[in-house]
Length: 253
Image: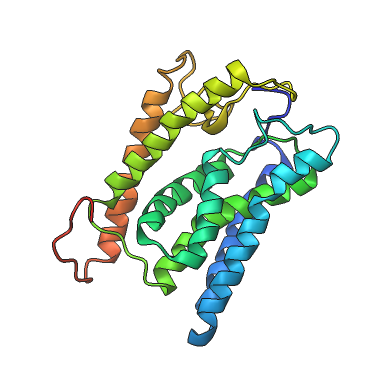
């Protein structure tokens, strides 16, 4: 954990403000889209996509404009799971790709939930940063729900496996990106690259993070927990969609 990282704890009032803000804003966003007329849904989804892409651009710009948060390739790029996910969700508001939706649905729900539950701010804890954090991580689970409820996005039986393999592949690539940045790129920000927390475990309380496990062994229970969460979400989805017609589910269809 570097001096830019701030873990917000349940003993702090702002922790509960962030939790309440995420739950209320997520609920209101879903209900707002529920109440849109049919002809307004398409343009409003694109407006939402524009808003998400602008929001996703905030942190790199913030680290450039705020002197005490000097821009650094080691920590200012949008390469954390949630940062990458908000970009993908924003673009998918325009393209409506089902394959892309599979990844953003599972990782959005899981990443958004745990990020709100165990907040870890990576560029300090200024009020604007905290508001941005809540907006991003609320959108991660609210927007995929909206796309299922109103825009015809559906999951196939084995999509949870595809979602996991995609997440595992990206996180594996990120190990090498972090290594390259730490070895070959001048560090101007004073913090080592740890995108997706695949180089050093995040300093948060999580049932799948065990004290004493070093790299890469601390990643094993995380991947195990990720599989369990995706399987659980898939089971809930299948139960809710049990009356839907699903013909010949294919793993790579």
